[in-house]
Image (cartoon, rainbow, N blue to C red; front, side, top):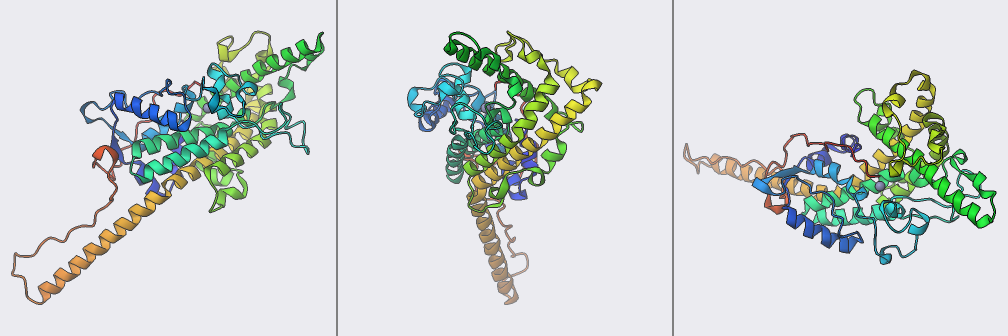
Length: 421
Ligand SMILES: [Zn+2]
C-alpha cells in the first residue's frame, strides 16, 4: 500500500529496525490453513484467502522482510475477506444499507463508518439511516489486538500481517467517501423523487445517487493513488512527510491511553469535516460526465482519463483545490497508522530493550570480573579469553529463522497498486 513508506519513516528507530527483520516465508498450504483458522476467529470469508505473501511460498527458504509484509498485507482486506459473509458476521444488519449482502460491495459495512446526522450541521452530515453505521473503527481495533497478541507471542509473520489489515481500515476512513454518505448534494439524483408512485421515485433516487457517488469515489481514489506514487511531484508530499504536524486527529493523537479504535474514530471525524470540501472539489475537477446515465465505473461502464487529469493546464486551480483538501486526509491516515504500529509493537520493543540491557550488563560484569582476575595475576599471557559482545536482539524470527535481525536491506514494495476498492 502506498502509505507504508511514509508510515515507516515516521516511526522510532527501534520500530524501524524491528520492521527490517526477516522471517521465512510460509509454505503456501500452511498459509492457506492459517488464514482459514484466522477467518474463523476474526469473522472473515474463509474461502477468499488473500494472495500468498511470497510468490514462491517457502521454496528454498524464501524470506520476507516484515516491512514488506506490512506493505502487501494492507491491501488484503479489499481482496474478498469481508465479502459475501454469513449473516452471523453482520449482527446489526448493516450491509443492506451499505452496499448489499452479496458481491464486492458487500464488504462496505466494514470499510466505512458514517457517524450519524449531527443536528448542528444536518445538511453536511445528512445520511440514511440517521444514526451511526459501519464497522471500520471496530475492525481496526479487532485486527490491531490480534496483531499485538501474535507479535508478543513471537509470531511476527502473522502478527505484522494482521497489523497491516488494521491499517487498511484506518486508511479507508481517511477517505471522505468512506466516512460520509453524501459528500456533496450535487452528486444526488433528487429529481427522481418527483415520480408516481412515490415509492418508485425514492428507490430510483437511492440507486441513481449511489451510482453517481460511487463514480466520484472511484475517481477520487484512483487519482489520489496515482499521484501518491509519484516522486517529487507528489502533490501531497508535505502532509505525508510531516503527518504529525498536518493531521487533525485532536487530543486522542497524544493521549497515552488511546487505542487504534479511538484513532480510527478521530480519522473518521476529521474526514467527515473534509468531506464537503473534497466533495465539491471532486465534482468540479472530475466534471459532471460522471453523473450521466449509465456511467458506472465500478462495473466498468465509463472511465476517467487520469493522464489528462494530472496534466491539463486549464484544470490547475481545480486540481490544487482538490489536492489541498486531500492532503490533510492523507496526513490523518499516515499519522493514525503510525500510532497503531507503535501501539502494537510497544510491548515487544520494551521486552527487546530490556533483554539487550540485561545482556550488556552481564557482559560488562563478566569483563570486570576477568579484569580483576587478571590484575590478581591469575592468568598467564595468552590465556586471556575474548570478552563477549552483548547480544543485539533476542527475539528469534518465527519459523526459527535467526537471520539478520539488523539487516538494512530495503524491502520490496508491492509491484502493482491495488485497485480492488
Ligand atoms: Zn477497503
